[in-house]
Image (cartoon, rainbow, N blue to C red; front, side, top):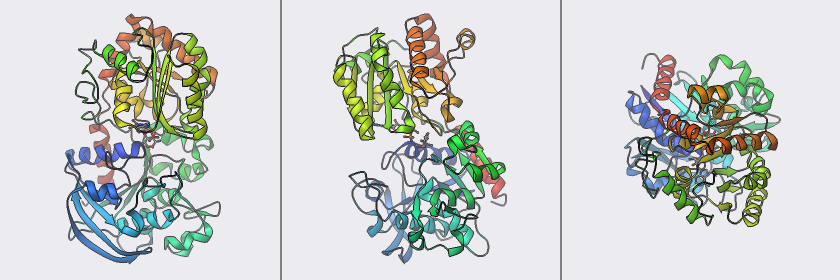
Length: 480
Ligand code: ADP
Ligand code: GLC
């Protein structure tokens, strides 16, 4: 079974969010269950520099405003996964992020950059290595299924995975021609969305199979509240839509082996976690207080992530004895809110504005509880990392958060299944109430410790999900 895994992110070379982590871990997991998964990546500088053993394999000539498009074959360091790199210097070889420039503005030529990406993926073959299935991820790769549908004759089946429906890759109608697709695709029965071309809708409309990254999100996106305007289409495709939970790469995320932590600890040797906590308090300039419940945040800061709910509750929770470490960046207003909070409570609230992998590990290790109060969350990875680190997640009951965290209800506490704290409505009150419950349980080690042990032994490894993807590929391409 040959699968071309089309993604624009790959940790640690290019990562804007969880997609980078998933693309680093799922292809090797697929290979372990017998799938010949190969990555297809845009020629961003970090990929050009970071992939090993690169050699040109296919020349595609001039396309989408690029003078010479070449596909290189290389390997991902560490995992050795084969990776194809779509080199088109005019479109990809520039500083800044994969989707935005260093000012945070979308690249003006994103329509062409990602039209080329989908077009090239859809027609790709490396000699006699031809994909049996094309697996495209998020809007960036959304045109691959459309280009496949535009091809005459036989074409490989496609899978489109939604990592986040909130980001759709919308292109104004007057720029539709830049995508190069047939005119009749720009239609309600096609990729048109409110008189714009939608890369996301292209993926959803033209792919043979749609997946998303948790079962609850797969159900939620068929309804207006979480459907971002695409719920109608998703509901009509319900038979082809499944939610497959993301996993964790425990080679990267395990406190027993994590080189970023000042100490190693595990479920059998939990005591050193206290040192990880005091080290984090020192690093972030908080009062070094072993008995204060310490809440951590590692997040993009935007409305979807719900951090405004936490910020509004912080004064009450500080008064109740809690501390906070916030690592994140994004929306200037939320950043300013975090800054104000840290200034108001210098001993209790610390804010690091930015993106820092090492600090993220130390927050997962050093905090007592991780806050993920998202309004929408397709899967969420940080709560899964937190579970393994014995840092009990406090989450909203939405998307993948609902599928992975068991609330410390009286019943769940009694039967030993609780792993965190879950609240329902996206309100400050509901958040505060859950945080107060967390503080109360924290102060009762006889309840907290067993929850940590339960959390740390939950297995969210990739093996199970990889096998589900493999079975899906086999149904789509039984001859392979
Ligand atoms: P999303 O993809 O919506 O941002 P996920 O929970 O799936 O959410 O993945 C987020 C990933 O990005 C995790 O690996 C998390 O640790 C990481 N991350 C988010 N913000 C930061 C930050 N400021 N510094 C370091 N890592 C971060
Ligand atoms: C998206 C989602 C997040 C998910 C990640 C990986 O960025 O926001 O919930 O975990 O993709 O699938």
